[in-house]
Length: 425
Image 1: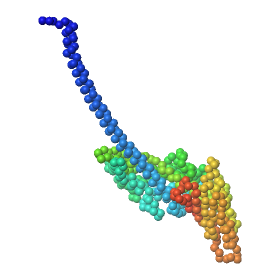
Image 2 (image 1 turned 135 degrees about the vertical axis):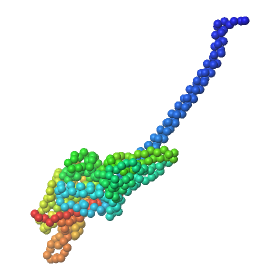
Image 3 (image 1 turned 90 degrees about the horizontal axis):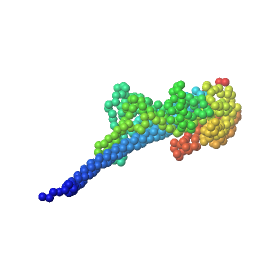
């Protein structure tokens, strides 16, 4: 029997082992490929899940930002519509030129705006009940791109008092009004500065000013507008505000707070304080018969005495001439910064015997009223009506600057009245 040599035996074994080794490598490669495919499929699935979840979250954040914009713009429009209306009868009256009177008017404007927004019902001008209407809008359900956005009621929050309003509160109930008052601190316009600083009267603070507090000045009020502060950080307000849920047809849901900010300020561009300031300065010139008070850097603390002969014939003529001076003042006056705050203003003074009009620094109607007053004082024309009143004078200021118009078709108008007690000295 032939015996194989060692070399032949080695070749024989190698011939048998080679196919087995190749088969094992092939099987291992298939197993690795299968596992790799599973890992890749899992990773791809995870990426898809993350992308879908991110879309839900992204859409929710976009929606929250949209709601915040809607809420802020609705609050702004509601405020500016009210400011530009005739609902201000009596609030714009000027009775004296002093820091105390300017401070009082500034605070009255802020408090009236805040009270209107959170009041129950509507005003006699049929204005919306600001906060209640806006809060009801953010509680509505909407569908967008196959996703449903809807408010969610949370029953688990406990309010600080048992009678505190719930998530569907409105401002026209006692409990709801408490929440609305906390949610709307009001104007952040600096009334203390406005009262005294005639050289630079318009500024707003980062937070609503309080007595003795320091104003951290923020930009945006240099034209005489202001900011409305909205604050949802109060614990009860935060609990009562609705939450928003986004859901799809597969039952996926994500929940979050309804507005995209916890506290913010709404810019009110209507320059109510600049109009009020102009009325004060016209009053100073026409009632005190000089421009010193109107052009001073600071307002006097107390009430000023009007000239003792103010009601005489000479005093009336001086008053009428002072309207020409006031007209020129509005057109030419500038702050130290070089800004002319009243240049775009016209004004009308309504008197029994006619109207004084001011436009581009030129007053008309003064001479006609002087002539009418001469006739009134003529002993040969008894019984004629007194053509000029000095102690209740309606004023209308018209702003021709289109930047601040509430109605793009018409310039803003500001109605005021100048009222004096009889002169005593």
